[in-house]
Image (cartoon, rainbow, N blue to C red):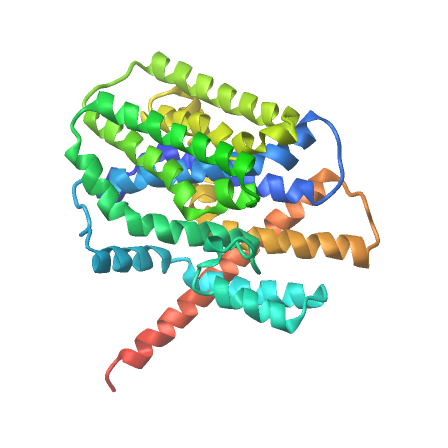
Length: 364
């Protein structure tokens, strides 16, 4: 997205969502207790993922509103592949790192190869037994590939609708369908509820579409300037509500998993994205700083790296150092530092490869 088109406050939301996912994976690897531990180890990751999908739909619609991509099958497929290619080389590198981890943990070569076969082309989320194969967080890329494929057609349909009330009704309808799917799968089938309501591309299309519709509402009111204090109140309300939902999740029973695993976070995630999109509140102004923007910029790469870093770090502490409990500062800081170092190592290697490719293309 061009700098002039960027809504800087939404980069704050991206950074917060990544923090939620990272803390969830880092903290839950080690035993602990207390409300803060429960929020980080149970709900923060699921909340962060919901925010990511809703935010992705919003930003895609905002960015392509005046330059909608072609929506034929061929062009949609090319559009999807082009969007995913930015992260695909890192995806392949992390698959190798993940395969080594599985081998060190006594996974058979045959099973590792099977996992790679479905994860390399990013089709793992379509399979009930393989949706978190090799590098578990790569399921997000698999879902995103499908969402990007659907986006051109989805954008065309949204742009045809000029009625804001209808858009709001569609948002409510999409969320109601998600609830219905979750309830029916949980009550009447033996399917893995996590696979259906958390990792399945079709189900996650709902979060993404809600984000797209929110962007259309934002676009239709782009000339309205909401009062700064109203924006501040809306941002605070959205943040408090999101925190409350994360706390509520820690108290929910297993019988509500069909609802709490994903759908619980969708309304508040959508509200957070919409509240911060106005970019006028005091909360977003306070949080807009260089460290937050830096974290938002590297978050897509750190997202693919951090899970395996945490796995290696956990096993090193447990099996090499023989330590069962460790200070939370080290639990969070060390994997984060290694993940960031991995991002910059990838950037360096990417530059080296691109420089070499340019040299090879130059005529003698």
